Amino acid sequence: DTGVSQDPRHKITKRGQNVTFRCDPISEHNRLYWYRQTLGQGPEFLTYFQNEAQLEKSRLLSDRFSAERPKGSFSTLEIQHTEQGDSAMYLCASSHPGLAGVVNEQFFGPGTRLTVL
Amino acid sequence: KNQVEQSPQSLIILEGKNCTLQCNYTVSPFSNLRWYKQDTGRGPVSLTIMTFSENTKSNGRYTATLDADTKQSSLHITASQLSDSASYICVVSESNYQLIWGAGTKLIIKP
Image (cartoon, rainbow over all chains, first blue to last red; front, side, top):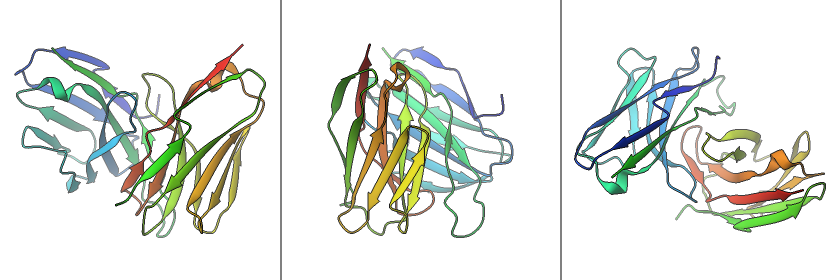
């Protein structure tokens, strides 16, 4: 499968615990995005990488959240001291910038569903 | 404030019927408008992407329209199938990475 993959698909944790999610983008894509989606809502942008550089972070990304993409390939999203409000689907997407002026399509992974008890 | 609003919130139709979903936006500056299909528990999948100069684009039984003057878009589904049951999300882009997402229309196709 050459699409975007995410691991794990589901995670149940207790409040206060730390969790880490992994995203493997499509191999030739140098842009990687993290989103959070709650039930009945569209995805909310969290952060964006171009290669290993984190270029944009949403105000939604509190100090408890950290994302890395150390070698410009896979990325991890860590949530420390989880709260019940963190329960959501965490989506990763990747894209190739292509030519200037050409719309870059984002390809999404299946998501990681987090439940904080 | 940049916003994307979709209607209806949910829709139930019989298999084989057509339907049209609406999207209004206030995003500025405007780069492009996308429609995504999202099955329950899955990531969104792109259906169409339209830039300012395009006013219609088709992808099989899906046809999207864009009126950049009135800032409205629609997604028309022809001859619906059970597999069309999903959420359809309208997304407007200010730039090539910053996307403003609507809340989606939940479509249910009944046999």
